[in-house]
Each structure stands twice: as structure tokens, then as C-alpha cells.
Length: 242
Ligand SMILES: [Zn+2]
Image (cartoon, rainbow, N blue to C red; front, top):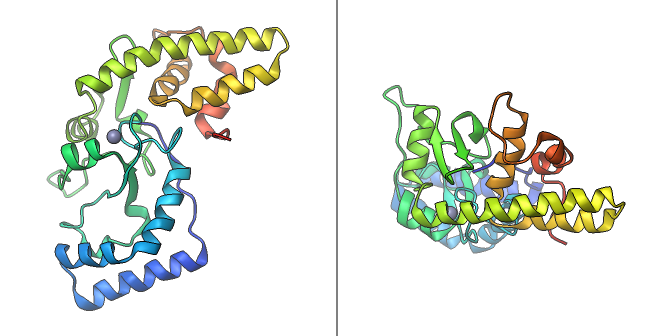
């Protein structure tokens, strides 16, 4: 899981979502009512899906695992708990069916004071709560929210761990190749490698390499000097698939 920047809505879509949200409030909708209204708002859902696809890492990857295609809009705070937030743009994330339907489902743990115990990659920096250990491919948590997040989204499920381990090897090789291309003055090739790096599944591996390289005393997979040129594009995801 990596931090993601949420784009603003255009005026037309914002107004439409507002109208639909107001209608839910007027009716005092429950979870089932909100689900019916949501399912009936096909055009708005399509436009939201497009925005979320552009906001996701790589090629429309799931915002939780970063591996599979994000196939559906997840209501971060589930409709069952927060029906009036059905059309709240800040409550929409793109998820794969495994993370959304098999792992998270309607779970939304809270601390005893009511604070949500899941990390929202569009609001929080996941790095504050969970850290990817590159040597094992597993996430370890630093906070209670981090622990819930790893558990509820199943972030240490075996297929993800194996995929991350493979991604570590692949990413190391590509980062080194990019450095070699730059040294040789071949910027076009270096750019193609960078675009490819950012569009691979498990971009959290690349992200962890860049973040780890910045941490004093941390064990790095690559020398900090090798990843330094990646900091801006990885943090900003400025280069996307073309
Ligand atoms: Zn997923």
C-alpha cells in the first residue's frame, strides 16, 4: 500500500453526487437503500471509476494490495455503517475483488474512542503505520491501525508475499539497468524503464526501496545513490502509462 493523491471532482459530477447524497439524507436511507441508490447511479459510478483508475498506482491497480486490477469501487467506510456516505467522493477507493469482497467485506474496525482502525491510502501515509520488509515480502505494522489494516485487507496473504519477493528481484534489476542507461547517456531508455517500473504491479516494492534508502541505518536492497533519481517520480507518480 502506498500513498495516493485524490484529484478534485469536476463541478458537474460534484453537483450530481451532492444531489444524490442529499436525497439519501432526505429519505433517511439505511444500508440497503444506499446500496440501491448507488447501484442505480450507473453514469456517476462510471465517471468515479475513471477518476479512481487515474489515481491508482500502475495500470489501475487495487489501492490496497497493488497487485490485481482494481475492479470495483470500495466504500472505505462500508454502506452498512455509513449509508449517507454512499456518494461521498472521499469515501471511494478502487479495490480488487479479493481485497474487497473476500478480505475486507463489511469490516471496518474502530478503536474504543471510535477512530477508524484502517489506513486510507488517500488520506494517510501508509508508511507511518505499515512497513514492507523487502527481505521477506511481508508487511509488519508499527501501529494498531497498521495491524488492523494488514489483517483486514489480508496484506500478508501468501500470493502477495510471493509476488512481492519476485517483484524485489525484478525491480532491483530494472533500477540497476536504468542507472546503467543513464550512465551511458541513454535517457530515452532510462525513461522507458522508469515508466515500466511505475506500471508494474507491486509498486509498493519500489516505493519501499526508495523510502528505505532514505532511512538512516536501514538495510537497503540498493544503494541510496542508485535510487535517488527515483524519489520524485515514485513519490509523485508523475509518469504514467502512455
Ligand atoms: Zn487488492
